[in-house]
Amino acid sequence: MALLSLDSIDLIYQTEKSETEAVSNLSFTVDEGEFIALVGPSGCGKTTLLSMIAGLMKPTRGSVTIDGEPVSPSSGTVGYMLQRDNLFEWRTIEANVLLGLSVQKKLTDESRQYALGMLDKYGLGEFRSAYPQELSGGMRQRAALIRTLAFKPRLLLLDEPFSAVDFQTRMTVCDDVHSIIKNENKTALLVTHDISEAVSMADKVIVLTRRPATVKKIFTLDIDAPTPLKRRESPRFSEWFDRIWKEVSHD
Ligand code: ADP
Ligand code: MG
Image 1: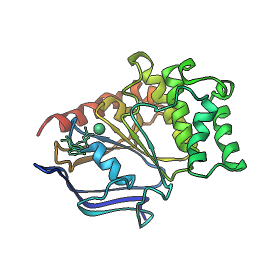
Image 2: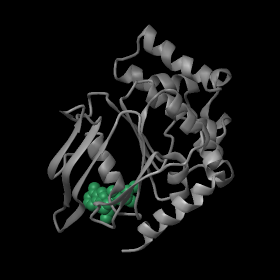
Image 3: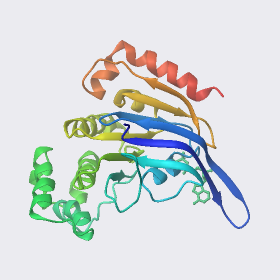
């Protein structure tokens, strides 16, 4: 059985004056361990889709299930990482990483050790007592990822997580995030409008149409290289980039 299953999803935003159809008859599944990239034009409905997968919003029609169960925001099965890292500047990295656990009353000796262990494992151990502003953009993103993983989510949602990272370091940050996700055997769904980012990171790329979003095409990539940076060097990289770019840019 698929880990995540979206079945014939519609989402219509209702306001007093108007209706906006953001998602229409959209279906796909994600298997355990897969790294999926969702690409589509700005405003097509990607963030809306993630909100439904996180259980923060109910589809107007259709169903979202994880392990066959309808999603709910309190189940803790879905971890959500946003564009900005949302670290609190006045709290240390350690406090930031433990805060969510504590707020949700899930801070135990075991969960604390797990979270702090990941800080050590991924090169942030010596920054435990540092404040976010003392860290580089890439390190902040790593800390934010660890904060999300501290809940041991079954599925990780990433909404354009690198768009706030400066261009020069973006590719290394992609590498870091990718290696943590693979190392921890997480299933991930990455939303991006950057096709090269999608091709460098994902096992599968799902191309969405313009709003209302529906699945236009699914590409299963076969780039045999271990990291996003290495994948960018592969000759297959530009072939996939071109194929997907054509799909995204032609209506
Ligand atoms: P993307 O993340 O792909 O850029 P979004 O999912 O944020 O797109 O938005 C899809 C469409 O739904 C856009 O046209 C947006 O204006 C509209 N939309 C998003 N949120 C709301 C809302 N809360 N109320 C009404 N319309 C919304
Ligand atoms: Mg968005």
